[in-house]
Amino acid sequence: MNAAVVEGPGKLVVRDVPDPRIGEFDCLCDNLYGATCSGTDLHIIANHKMPFPIEFPTMLGHETIGRVIEVGPKVRYLKPGDLVTRVINPEQGDLKSNWGGFAERGVAADHRAMLEAGIDPGWSTGIHRVLPEGTDPAKATMIITWRETFSFISRIGVRVGSSVLVIGSGANGLAFANHASNFMAGRVAMIGSAKRREAAARVGVTDYLRYDAENLIGEARGRGLDGFDLIIDALGRQGVLSGAIPLLKSGGTVSVYGMDSFGDTAINPMQPVSFTVANSGYQEGEGHDPVMRWLEAGWLRAENYLDLDRVFPLEAIGEAFEAVRRRELIKAVVRLDAKR
Image (cartoon, rainbow, N blue to C red; front, top):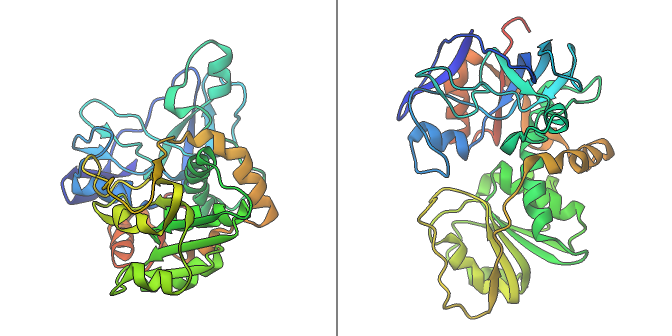
């Protein structure tokens, strides 16, 4: 089968790799669509420091939707024909995997059957979930981003009527703003790029500040944007969060989700306000059911993040990432099934 493989820093290719093998609790899937991640995927391609190992060559992609075609003997809760989230490819010998979802086929595990058998699925608990009949698999690629960010922000907590400032206008930043709005925050502000103002407004951002403002703090205060209850840094870039903390209310909370400067991010404690740093993490699977309810209610819309008229075939995945780097797209959708 064909798969996207990072052969070394900056070298992304599509090449033939062995089909995945499934275990007793696994399902083999035909992959349909995957979405790019401008955070994790681009950092892996560039070989930046991450909270997990990167060894080359490695298969790429963690936002893939697939359809089950074969099940292992101990699978109980998935069946052929099911549309499943977060399909991956395990490593095979010298070919490593950073999830490996950008491939023509992949694997999903029946975590419920594993738990009932006394086996701990680990980090993958709840990520391979069956989607309702009729779900658009291209739109469904957004579910992974929504689940991760929902888990993260819900663990911190957003009170009705509170004020939230999101740093970053990529897909994760927009998702945090979307969730905060759905939690009925009174004010949802964002610091982002000029190109994303309209996209931000569509997901519930009430006030928008540009990264490149000459005097960001002064402009914010001049517009009454001050005293935020919560700041979420969706970039994780050195110095950015510290520069925004003066906009926090005394006793407010800050949290870092992004990984642009992973391992080197520092927060200057000598700030004009007291604050708490929340490091609650996330577990993607716990966000599935609430995200699906919000999706059904129309509170989350893939069209606000994805250009579904510009879908890339797997062999053009390099072009997809270039479009994301140039900020032409928030996320790019990649078609993984050549027959579609």
